[in-house]
Length: 172
Image (cartoon, rainbow, N blue to C red; front, side, top):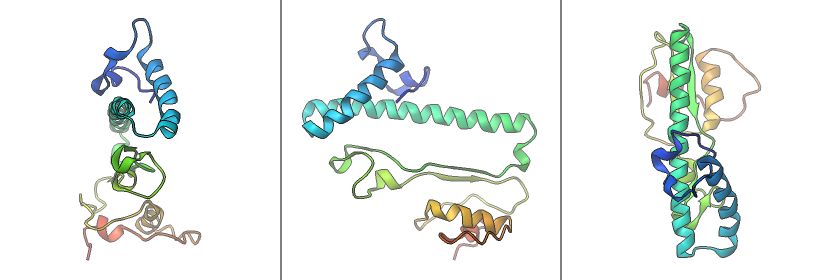
């Protein structure tokens, strides 16, 4: 929740920050105070309003991460390395913001927590086409996929399955 400007104010309502206080410091303290209290007080109308405020800070954080990915890709392109770099972008988990009366993560898995991006940007010439998986896949499949694509034959890979057929546009 320590989102820098100008990203913080893209979604978060910075008008609630007292005059003279740093926006970023305010929302970090807000989050540190809110979540422990929520687990004691549960779902009061005030807590639901505060959770909505933090959800908007979270969205600001996503905008910030998007800008970092753009900076990375632009840097690779400017350095002449984008065309020989295999890029995977993913996340370990999502966050709940009141759906199923749950916040953050933990407890029974729901879509808010386990539906994460898996974006593969291969270099040109690898015969990998844009695709959208129609069946659930798991992050544990990334390493077996890379092992098969790059023919690494790592004997230590024991879990997951290769997504190469999906990436090579041969999904059955």
